[in-house]
Image 1 (tube, rainbow, N blue to C red):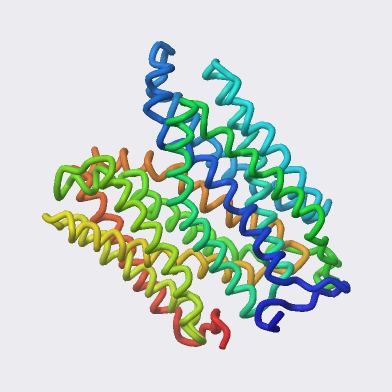
Image 2 (image 1 turned 180 degrees about the vertical axis):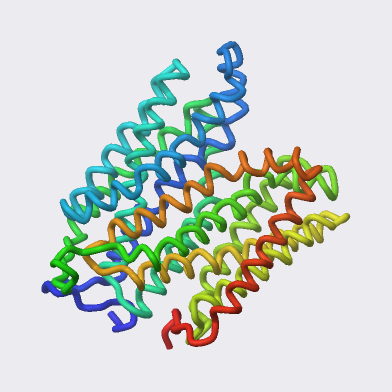
Length: 400
């Protein structure tokens, strides 16, 4: 194994590609919980149409895990700091598999939502601990690479998973995609037999108690929340954004959605190419691309130009996510990595959950979706200006 893919741990263990792959597979599980159900949403809406409030409750059943990830990720990180990463990850994966499958056998919408809440808590632990272990196992350039690969793989997996969810829905009906949750069992077994528990650092901190450096972390969390809201607006409003330029079919929406995920994956991989670039510089580049994409989508009158605009914006977001995650990992003491990654995960998933709520509320205030896109572009430009004022003297985030 080349040295740039692994760093020696304080124990006799050494992280390698197999450890990174297992953690990436684990990190794919939480997004899968929503993505695979998108194709069967119309079936669920029809099935529960006689339930009072189903127009609200069925989509909530789909997205409630994201809210749980936002709420419980910091707690999951704190528990993993105290109890150890590996037991928390394995337990969460097994709970995910069991509880994720439960709705396959349920016919009551309330019971399905309760099961999805428990699933979301397990997802919070999986996402947080998988990311924390990448930070524990890898350092410097290797860490940057694996964080980028993680985000890229999660984006690309969406293309495959949404197709698989559709096929399972076709053959097994509205409960078919819930069978996919069983994939977490072999991942849990691999984690049990291959992953190792990283040794706790003995870094000296005030009163020997590890502290989260809040003054440095909070601004990064707010930026992450903003990125989550603005990025997921593209995903949840994709059909409506495309409709601003032309009438579109579900197949066209799916194809352009796949292109957006590819753009995000390419942006994540491009992150590591900016040798010696600082956090503020990378943020300014990512937000500039996002602003260009949103302005283009707002004013486009041709579907091809809207598609290009969405790809450009997604590429920018793909750069922003590894930037924010690597930046926050770089400022955290090792003993609070779990808490820190939990806070980052919570901020990002809070953005994911609130994106459709905020966009819908803004539409009525600013006079339409195209104006919402212009507002987001304007906020991104303000972010660019603020980032540019911080570039001078900022430390390089991407190592040579």
